[in-house]
Length: 123
Image (cartoon, rainbow, N blue to C red; front, side, top):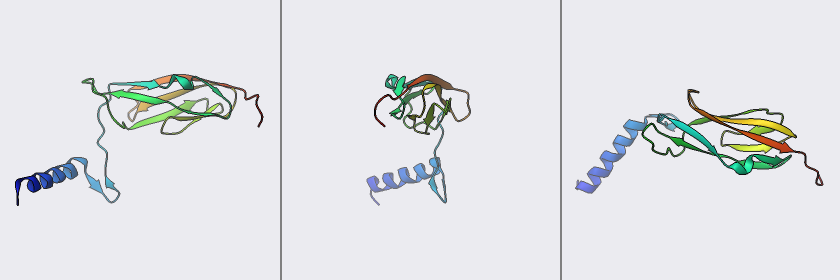
């Protein structure tokens, strides 16, 4: 077996061993999160019936950016704004809501305020 093929097979084996597997496929390895910052100030004021997506910047203790971190999203004020687990906000009624993102242990989080204005346009 030549060296490139052997190296590729070794890398694949290490990937499987590091990530782990079960019946549903590879499992995610959670990277420690030092800080979270919600981005997307365009969602601060929304019109009833509209949708907007906020992002998040997650950093490791070493200051490295984390791609696709494992997070939990929530909305305090779900009568005003509904939030999915990808940071997509749907403005459902006039008022204010707080959007929160946190790591899976709840030890690191960030929040932003969303104001929903009444839709005066045609329905």
